[in-house]
Amino acid sequence: MISPWRLWADRLTLLRAILGAPLLVLLASEQQSWAWLLLLIGALSDWADGWMARKADGGSSWGAKLDPLADKLLISAPLIWLAAERQLPLWAVWLLLARELLISGWRSGSSSGAPASWLGKSKTTVQFLSLFLMLWPPSWTSVQITQVLHALGWWLFWPGLVLALWSAIAYLSPRSALGRH
Image 1 (cartoon, rainbow, N blue to C red):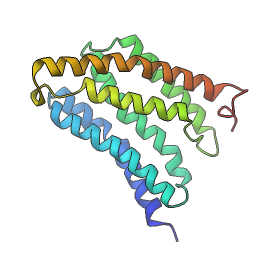
Image 2 (image 1 turned 120 degrees about the horizontal axis):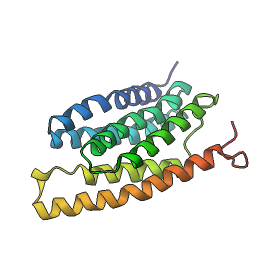
Image 3 (image 1 turned 90 degrees about the vertical axis):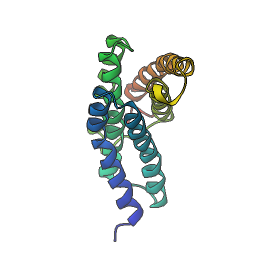
Image 4 (image 1 turned 45 degrees about the vertical axis):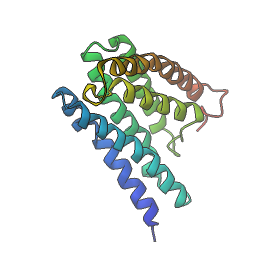
């Protein structure tokens, strides 16, 4: 019998995978408060599905492969919107998305789904924090506070990009334990 924890972990992962499209629609239609809340739901589902998978003594191999892809879909949508709005340089977003495609392809060839390293998990955390700050809805605080939060998010994007590239090198390095599958 499959653990209910594992089933719910997989369901949350699937939910997170489909949140990117409505998130992008909300951002494009200037519904920043709803978009921010949807991103929060996605981030919380990332934490919750991991917790549930651990509670079930490990997730499914399907969930292990879908989880990093779901993160990428959720994070890519606002990054593309921020680049289209010229709040982030297009080259930086394309570099990050190219990294995500490269690592997703590498992971798909791994029988274990290539679990995330501490670098990969750190990258995801920094990216979520950066997006929460850059997408902070202006209607929630004063103009000055909103500008400070957006600027902090912009500055936090760059260490996230460095972590993304560093983790890609670590995953693909033949000498790294991360690079073996």
